[in-house]
Amino acid sequence: MWGLILLACTSEIKETEFSFCSSATSALYDPLGSEEILSFPDDFLTSADPHSPTGLYLDFSESKAPWSPLLPNLLLSVPQDAKTRSGFARMGNVVMRFSGPISEGPNDPLASLEDSSLLWLDISVSPPERIPFSTKLGEDFDQLILSPLFPLRPGAKHAVFMTNEYSDAEGNCIAPAPLIKDIINDTATEPLHEMHSDYMEAISAAEINPETISHAIVFTTQADHGLMIEVSHDIEQQSYRWEEEPNCESTEEHRYCVGTLKARDYRNGKEILDTE
Image 1 (cartoon, rainbow, N blue to C red):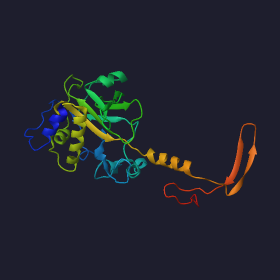
Image 2: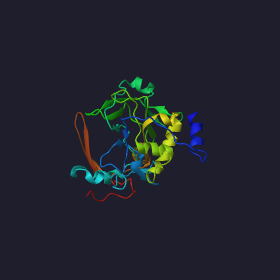
Image 3: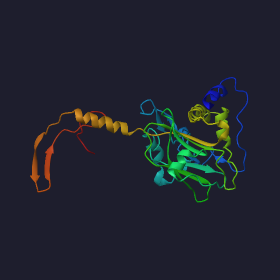
């Protein structure tokens, strides 16, 4: 039902904004206005790449992630390395931050599949698949960490929703961050405005009332293993021969051979002549 309502609400006939929970405790989300990571993963931290298997690459540049120049020297290579990834980790945690202490989340995998206050959905399939997870709170009880119980489908879009049924440490609902409200209401400015369609797609797939949302994260998993599968299939189709007959030594347990063959780089098909 909410999918049909959202179609109307995101069209020109939408006249009023959604109304959300109001509370002293709120979710924290402001990727361009904070010098630390408040929510992760997040498809805002990606850019389009037509050559990527997902159509995306991770973008931790300063224009998307103001915290990246502040990384310690040991991690300064992370933004550059991220460009080689087509999405986020398939066994990575989801992290949410809040303005104050919150209550504990579900830890029983079966309970996480039935919980209506905290939902993790793979929305790349129809109907969306609920992902079982465990949770733990950070040291100050203002950070919620969700861990999936099995590897996520590669190249898949995921959505994690906290609804207003989830409470803070005092038992009150948790207000969404102002920016999350703006994104859902289609009042966010660029470049965050680009997230509106992703949020609406996820909300429609989850069939939840937008006004019940306290926090929302949308992200895409990487599909970088695809190249390795292509390479393995290509290897199976190739024929190989020794340039020199191998010299072999046999023992009771092993047969050890040393020989020479032409090896090729499967990224470009060229012969490898030098290992340096």
